[in-house]
Length: 170
Image: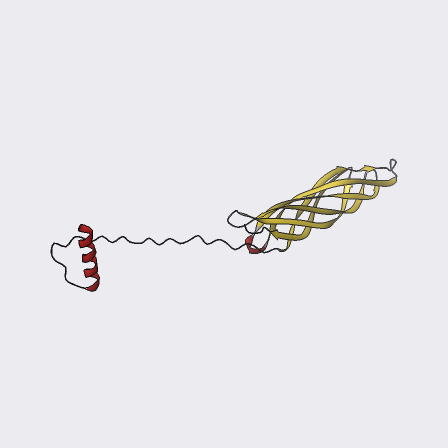
């Protein structure tokens, strides 16, 4: 019976009718508004670029006799962790690597060497909220020209390009 009286009192208060003195107190629950989580739009596939320093080292043997001229050559494994930014704020760190064949003339164990390397790598990319957004593949080439003295320490700036492939939605 109390529920019926409470409902009648609620209706009366909404239309402005006078309430009897002994009318029950009406407590109306307040709706709590919650904002629905809006899913972030998926990034679109697109071309991307990345730049950074490739590094590596190798021993270079000079074939010259003492106080004579000769030739030296060697292969250097170049590696880097490239920071990539894709569409819609997608980001990732991609390991890249490649081999540079370096050669040049030398005298007394030292000289200038030069050569190029094809560098490539791939890795995962992540949205701002930490979800995996897709994968990226990078490639490019870098030219090295450096003076070495028995041991080559390479730290070469490179700019690579590639393609970001967005994951398909579930």
